[in-house]
Image 1 (cartoon, rainbow over the protein chains, first blue to last red):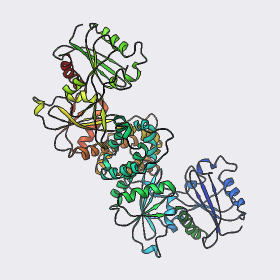
Image 2 (cartoon, chains in turn red, cyan):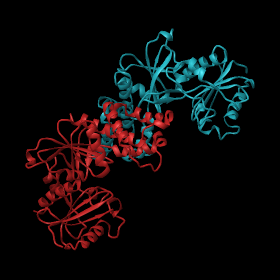
Image 3 (cartoon, helix red, strand yellow):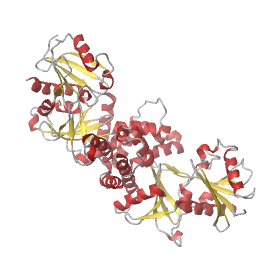
Image 4 (tube, rainbow over the protein chains, first blue to last red):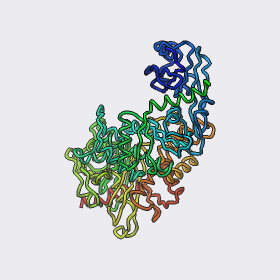
Length: 309
Length: 309
């Protein structure tokens, strides 16, 4: 199958690949778990993985590829050094590198960094997704928008006039794993219990948002409550999650100013999207749920048009 | 050597034992690492450990012993159930249990618990230390005092008129270990680097106290700063410590009200005492450093006199 370009969202643990026509429409796609973390161990490394998926789509051997994500990290296929904020699709295209060892033209978009005392930050992949969000008919006229991409390292990003103007990472998912697995709270988390108690989550999110600085005490209260009143203790994992999400939202409010002026754009899928949306609503904050996969494709396509022009 | 009573501060990892005369003066002492966690594996278990140390002091076989700490936990020698706040030496004496299996009279003081929605809390050992602090000539007239006992699970305790009226645990040391060992920050912590950078600690404590809700972002900034400017990145472990201590102090302020009204009584020793005292001073808070070992002995003696009267 011919096409204008192949676009790849190539992260730490996954690869999503789309064959795209010259108007940005999807002709075919592939999904794989051959992410940055394991691709070097595949036959032919990154190039081998890419060629096999493109061959499966009958793509021509000289079809150009534009990729974003951890594939461009130092420990990835080829390093695409961070560009600094403010960043837009032109900045990403200008910072793209062509992979020297690839037979076909393969371009990797850079990540974005922010240099500021105590506010140093980096992202890789999310910038492309954010720049692919639809901010209305004339994105260059759009006022500042606040975008939340939750995860192990949640990103909160400000976008104005089509450019990423600033961002902050919160290590929410990372904290959840470390606290539930490696502190006294591990004794309150039954192994294998993956159930989610939305009432406990929402109650903890409300309490945590009201008094965010008390989180370290509320963590111990989960344990002590379970010791003193085992029967009535709320679900520990859901409570921990609610407290950590609340701390993230309170931190974003501290960094970005009032959060209730306009809806927060939430870029997530599945259970994570549902959980953050529930927290925003419980805290009286507006939320617009975005389709992250369509967004990263649009962001890649915008950069690809500039690179291949 | 005869004596009035033997007093034991028997925690998870240590035992301190004093032979005491009837006015509370120390006649002799023993220190050991045979704490609650390992005493069951010693010959004769807890009783064997205690008897050997008392024999080494030539104490009579019928000398009574009064102990506090994790030795009275469910997983200790014999469980001394928590008493509730408010608690004073009489409450502790009334809640003491006599160990059934011991040949000599051995009494274990209870821990203290607080039952309150989302504020459930427990302590075991610290209550005896706190009630042994010297609050002046007439402790019954003393106004509310705020006591900080830092550690893996830091305790902040309010004392008024000689009674513990409330307390809150902060899992500061536990968080430090989990975050430095089991999150992305572990990559910023050189193994074996135990140096302490006071300037980095104090700067982080100030920044963290000013914007405590941003801590999750500042944790990532430690990592990102190291990636972007390896040469000028501040000491990661000391920065993490400063941020977590600041979060604890901010949380205590949220729970107990303004902290600058009177000096905080800091019960700690060595490096930990120096670190917390430095943080309090950097934040403009008054601090009185207390001798924790003398305090626990006085608290044990006050309870012993009531038990043995």
